Length: 158
Image 1 (cartoon, rainbow, N blue to C red):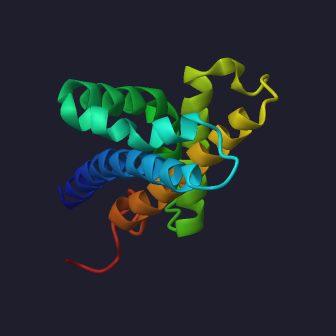
Image 2: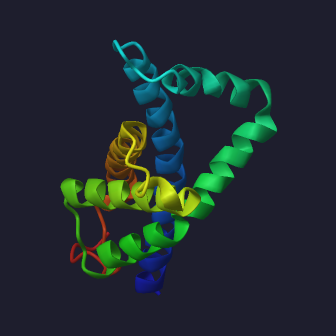
């Protein structure tokens, strides 16, 4: 009974960590675009990406759509990474950050499959920004659920 409770607790922690990490990752994308738009010779659409959250705040269904779309696009690869981390009790923050970056870039590739074929510098900048936001999301996931990863119950009796 205690083992089943521990596994259920881990599943809920993974779900909560994922949902919060997606939200923080979206905020990180906006923050990165906002900072980069102030650099000289920044592409013009960086300005648009920096102020786009205002539209999501003014029209809440748009914000919920973006959040839901991000969950759909990154859900499968994140589930695979979470299962790997839980089954092997992988608790390194750097590994969770790497998983987060890979999941974010994978989601970006799903929504824009031709981005890698476009050799424009803006596409590479977008991929780098998405990966950086995924690293931040992976760190947040680690803080919530990754530090205690592992379906196996700890040895100490609680």
